[in-house]
Image (cartoon, rainbow, N blue to C red):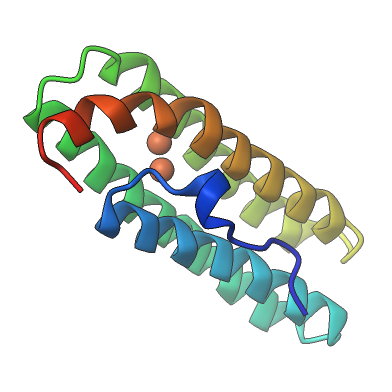
Length: 136
Ligand SMILES: [Fe+2]
Ligand SMILES: [Fe+2]
């Protein structure tokens, strides 16, 4: 039962660690989905959303360090996009704690859309640059 499916040919940035982290994020989104479908407790769902916030920060830090280390020129707009998403995830966690469960649907839609679009449009921009530098 998957809400988001990883597709190598579509989402891979050809850098092993980063692909694994992206798969991890997709995995957590699927966990939220599964918890919702299985009518898990609010506490369980809140815990998974918390994990999403933590892992997102870890992943963004890794990506930003990689771009900085190799002098990728588009680091700043990329960092801004990351900051926006982190703020959004924190906001969702707060919204979820004060609203009824129906909000989880829109949270899931947003997480999926933002993450996949970000990987395809922004993360893929550093791909040729870093791959060229031997980062795989
Ligand atoms: Fe990114
Ligand atoms: Fe990323």
